[in-house]
Image (cartoon, rainbow, N blue to C red; front, side):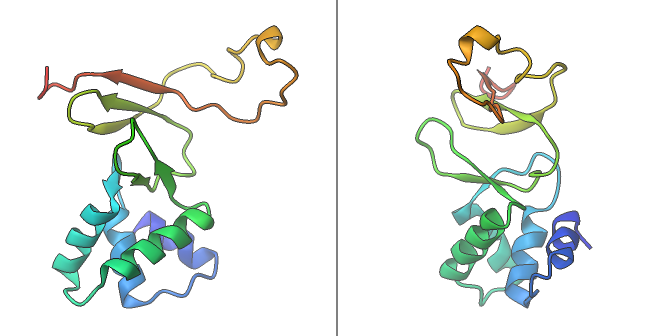
Length: 136
């Protein structure tokens, strides 16, 4: 069983065949699929799954905090199942490929107090950009 599916079941999420397939498609490291990519892969496993079901299921997973929506440079939203593992993203400026990275250090601690302007900072999102090996 996938890690994502286990987490969802642990939250009491009702697992239908459609929801199970969406969770299985999203499972793994460095997975950052668009909703259309999730639908295409899910339809390969369960041909009768609708695009609306995939979008609704992704929305539920995001609302539960089990999947993160990742947006980069106005491209299609991508869905990241590594919501419980702190990480940043490395994005190819050309093709949009995304990889999870785990830099050392704490981006919250790296922001000096005088640069917080009174904000109670609770999280930081850092995106590294460059060219992937294929585009370079």
